[in-house]
Image (cartoon, rainbow, N blue to C red; front, side):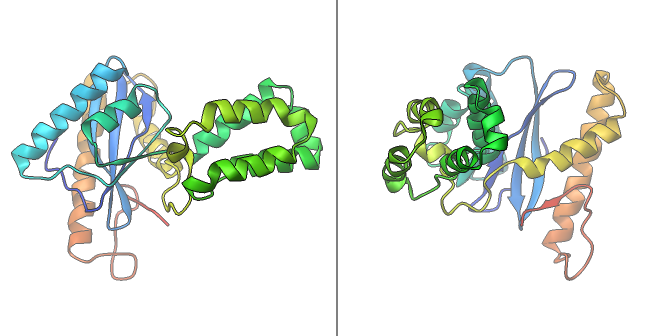
Length: 248
C-alpha cells in the first residue's frame, strides 16, 4: 500500500468501478487536493469484504504509526458499505453522495410516471427540486418536509410518500443532508476515472497491465504529495494536475 498519509481532519471518498475485478479505491483530501491512497481488488462487495478491507487498513496504519481516524467518509448509499464504515470507524461521519441521492429521487419520479410532467410542468419540477434541496439543519429536516408536504400537488403525492418512507427515518437524514457540508459529492472523482480509462485504452485489462497502471498512478500520487509538502501550490509552483484534483 505504500505510506499512508492522512491529513487531520481527513475526508475519505469512495467510488466503485469494475475492471478486471471490483476495484475499490479510497481517496484522501490532502491540502485541498483529492489523492488516491488505497487500491483494493475484490471479487465481491458485501459486509464481510468491506470489514476485511478496513481491518487490513487499520493493521497497516498501526504498522506505519498512523492514526486512521478520518472525520468524514463520502460514499454511495450502499447497504453493505455504510454499516461497515460505522462499525470500523465509530468516530467518523458517513456522508452519502448528494448526486446519487438526487438521482435516486429523480429515478423514483420517473417510475411514478412524472418524467413528462417534470420536464413540462414548472410547478411539478419546482416541487421535486425543493424536495431534493431539503438540506436544512438535521433537526429541522422533518419540519421542512411537513411544510412542503402541506403544499404538494396531487401528482407528486406518491413521490412525497416515497421520500418520507425512504429518506426521512432518523438514521437516514444525516446520510443525505448536506447542510453546511463543503464536499457534497464524489463527482469530482469522475475526472480521475476518465483519465484512468484513457490511459488503459481498452476494457478488461489483463491483470499485470492493470497492476502496472496502478503502480504508475501511485508513483504520480507520491510526487504530488511531495510537491505540496514542499509548498508547490497553484500560486507558487506546479502540481501535476493529472494526478490530483483540487476541491473547490
